Image (cartoon, rainbow, N blue to C red; front, top):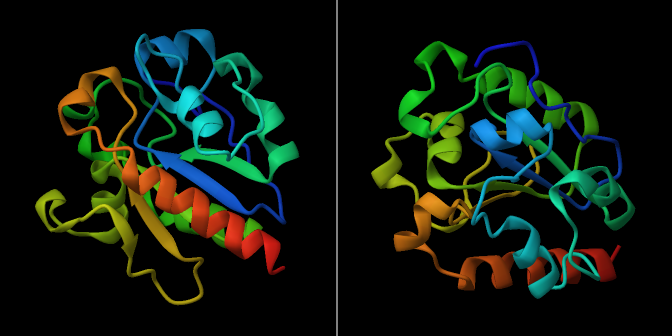
Length: 173
């Protein structure tokens, strides 16, 4: 499936955190809602880590701005699993422009592939946790993918570490 901006960005100035995925899953694209695939852990993990005060449904994604959270993807024009995304669909420059325009306090990549594509590194050289950010950019954090297809690599600890960091920075602001 290809079309311009399958899911709208949820980006406004003043956000504490922006999550960036690779691309919408086919289910997310069809439902026009972020992280809507069967078995995706994104919405439960937000509540479990305290990033949101209660569980939300994928269709409630626009409510995240109330909690200082935004959403985007590095691929805005295609959907599918990582292996199905055309190389030319990745847009690291567009992502950088969008993030610099709203200047969130943190940018978290949901999965190593999106982070690797943005940072210009092989996926094997990307670790979970903090990552070096380009100049004039918010701190970057890399998280395990919440996709049901990524269950073998699931580790909740980086999610809790990010939540603690965001809370610490929010409290000191």
